Image (cartoon, rainbow, N blue to C red; front, top):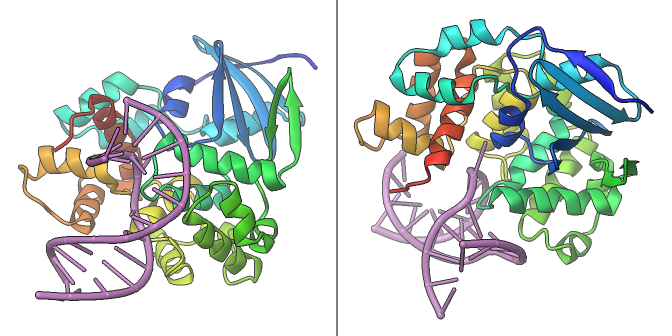
Length: 285
DNA sequence: ACCCAGGCGATTG
DNA sequence: CAATCGCATGGG
């Protein structure tokens, strides 16, 4: 199979998009990135305005465009959220970062696993589940596994998951997968609903199953087309508190509401730029 | 040995 | 309500 070429017509940075922490199942090998999503293994790199890529199974450039939102006009989005010096600095540093379109079920399980875990740890858990149930795909000597389907994780035994070091998230993973498998909810339908409705539905259906406000917001933003969602994790809480609330301690709900009012319909983009920016600075308090 | 990691759920006051 | 705590596991 031959490497394909995609000429970018709009602003895009593969590196910032992958490395900003929104999506977990990728590896860097030399100057190539291997990305495992939507049952497809993609090998890709960016040189200036050109993407070189190859996928297995074979996909058209439409697939690449889909997962990275290449059609979205980033300049217009940035224009809308660029309200002050802080966000301007973040945008300047990470220009080209796009919110990805993730597969909803994998996204949901990913963020259920994110509770009290580091990013490498989350990735590790996801890969363990994939090795257990997924289909193997090989591309240029690199091997990965597709992400399990809801019925597969629903029927997994707790011992099976825990033996694979997936830890206390195992119960939640199984519960969430079971709810989907028994048709309590159809994730794809949520993308047609309003942000509020989709979020409320997630919180209601998965109550007590490891899905709280932050996880629900991540799923809305990263897999359900809700670009106004503004997930507030510890890093976003820090930077928002420091810059917009004079060091006071507003609730996460207050921060999220303020951010949507302040940044507008693309608040989720602002969140990702601020998250990446604050995390790169590291100091805590 | 100890603390933290992109929270959540259960338990208290 | 808000505040506090335990949670499996891995890595600094």
